[in-house]
Image (cartoon, rainbow, N blue to C red; front, side, top):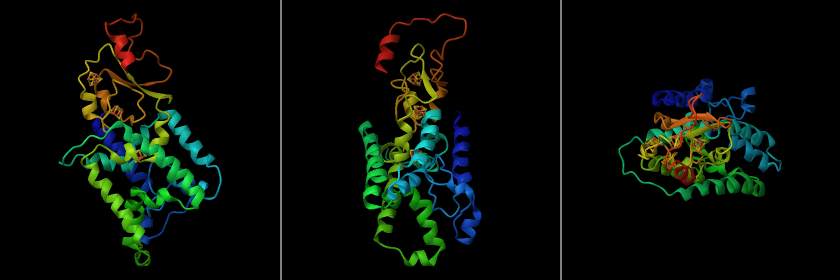
Length: 287
Ligand code: SF4
Ligand code: SF4
Ligand code: SF4
């Protein structure tokens, strides 16, 4: 996918799910039938212009009420089994915001790969376990996307909400500011280390219908794919990496392409026998 095309998709992912303009004009929430639909994006359902439900909010709601979140898990599993983490790379507004913030001139820092395990802890703790025990939706209370498009607009639009500000609101603001600041220095810190929705989708990257394929016969190991990757990974080492957002930026290199799980030799030209290249097997096993 071209750079511009991805930005257009990301723009649509930010605008279309938040197109209930009446909500902003009248300081009210959309409560029509679309609100029962889980979008595959981290997009706060409490935003005055939001048309859909946040999947993480839905999962927590079921846990708070002591029920198994079949609906939310089923929806997310269907999306993940089809495209893996592609909605993170092409549609999610909070991912888009982090991509834009990284464009700022700032001191750039890499974070180690093991930070990815935090997001599974956040999923297990703040989305499932703690809401089940405390009957409070703790991830949503702290979510920076919720603060950005839910909390801040309400505080701006409604004086009654302003009068109810407590210490927790300032904690939420601090968390939002932390991720806004660090996103200018680190590639997508929230997506890589914290986001429980990304954690769910990343479980499907190895087996989803859509796959990223790498061609060891033509790859020169130049590392340019990592430089343009929004999560700083090398797809030539592991094309099914759980951190991969399937943004397809790296498919500008002819050694990488989008394929399907059923396509076992995606780089073969039909009708020609496969060519064995010295070192290809060791490169494959290194991946
Ligand atoms: S990891 Fe979360 S915040 Fe990042 S793009 Fe995916 S859903 Fe959005
Ligand atoms: S996949 Fe392409 S960009 Fe990445 S190391 Fe190989 S040749 Fe370079
Ligand atoms: S490895 Fe390629 S498809 Fe995956 S996130 Fe990086 S640039 Fe995007």
